[in-house]
Length: 310
Image (cartoon, rainbow, N blue to C red; front, side, top):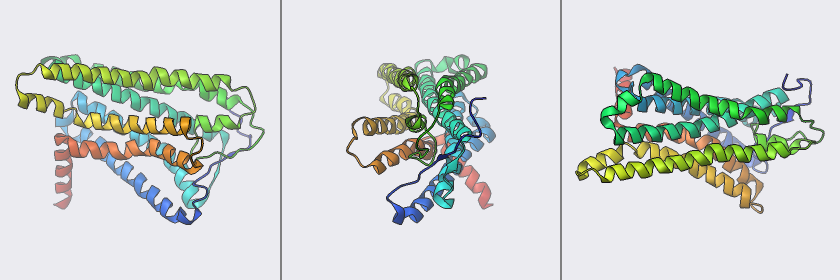
């Protein structure tokens, strides 16, 4: 067993010091979560039902939506439980499992954005070979690789986390469990759990961002070689949705990192708010971006809405 189910539970925390705003915060989070469920659920439904969307690009969009849906369903029960019901206690086992899912899905999302950049590069650089390079079988293998990377690499820190004694305070600073939050409460040598995440972030998030940047440098180089200005614009337009999602993800990551690194004198509530933005803003924005910027998905939504009007 990874954990001792008889151990004292951890206590989750909402927004300390903002008690007078609790009703508005609760309503806001409920609306945000419902929007994320509807948005990502709609994207998945459209891609499954619309055969014109059965292409590598949209399979990766579906994987992104599924990842965002996973983040939503992982954090929603405890966040709404704390804000609506005041239910703060969470067993250590449930806390470790939630932290495992949250951090795994974060790595998966970074990986999905990387393979989507690769998809755009192949589509623009080798359009005639696009479907022969990104066959359904290869797309499945890439998807499984991204999932396995996310869900396997995070295992070591969760296993060690679950083996630590917690002899002091059991109060966490968020309404969901994060490794960096739980580890502060451990009464043990946590050197491995401090160093491993740094290496992990370097080999996943940082490396992914560099490879995405290289992909777009190669894409721009290819586009500049196209004679027609109209064709150049058309090629770049297919990348707008993905670039927007990359910016949403990495801007929130950068903001959270800067706050934790240099925000020593920033109010604690700002740290908490940035954490919520990091985990909730991409799943909220991604379906909006693809619904607005991708013609095929926009047309699918319009067809879906017209069916409901009949």
